[in-house]
Length: 334
Ligand code: UDP
Ligand code: MG
Image 1: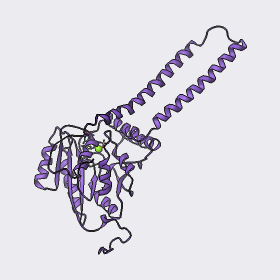
Image 2: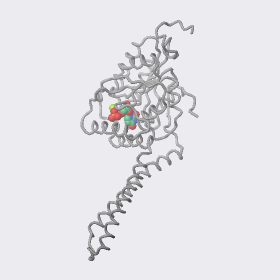
Image 3: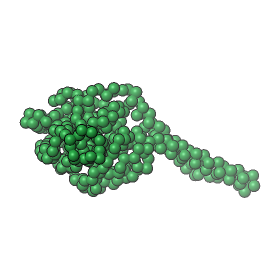
Image 4: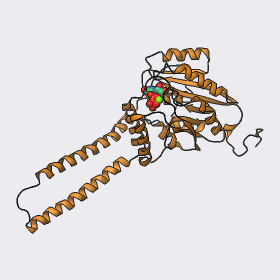
């Protein structure tokens, strides 16, 4: 109650006044063409916010170009830039997870390195946090991507909203901010096939959105191959919903019911004496193939869940750190 700051009397959150720390977590994989520009823009954006000390944690996800060299140069020139180097390529979500584990700040921002997530939005994210928001999601007002990726993203978001027990606001990705409390809860979630937007929705707290226009990638090709994106979408579905299993069950019940009706029809026909010769060979083949297909799909679906259970049981780490310019921030998750 003795808070001297007159700025925002409505909230009792400690996050809004005084000097606060921010960590910007960025996964980088072969981003040599974007890195210098990214660092420059993040620095400019963060420096423009009053009462904020910041660090940026770049997580190198096994880059094979000059990304690491450039990141080291950034660190040498300005100690606020940090590099966590993974031992190989572990993927976007694992790299972010590594960055989150190394961040120790009042709030963390997650963003991609290709400048699709504009660093200039950071002040707005921080403002929403200072107003009391704990999980701030950056939501795209528009998207610059076109073609199959675009259609895929849109379809996935619709599908995910319908399927998931924890819907994420459509048009949000990893870009956003979490306060310390939310960040620490997220770090505690140790599941291996990670879908961070879903996990972030799952943890709850005061969730808010901020809008921005999504640009196309500034330089280079997308590093997430289409196959990876599809896998990522499947993680989103299978980690957050049992609906596929339930749908299979409904399909099974429907097919059984139908077959019962069809069988009854033929039996009555036979008893009434309308049919004597053996016909319906094509129908039989079609039905066998149809049911065989349904059964294989159902087994495949089970396999998706089973594989994920297997990943959990093996209990391998999500990533391995080769070298880092800062200590592990958040104390070990468990
Ligand atoms: N990335 C990564 N590991 C990977 C693939 C991508 O760390 O295996 C990084 C990449 O450097 C970028 C971010 O993840 O900062 C998003 O990748 P990309 O732009 O290729 O994905 P998209 O925008 O198509 O989802
Ligand atoms: Mg991108």
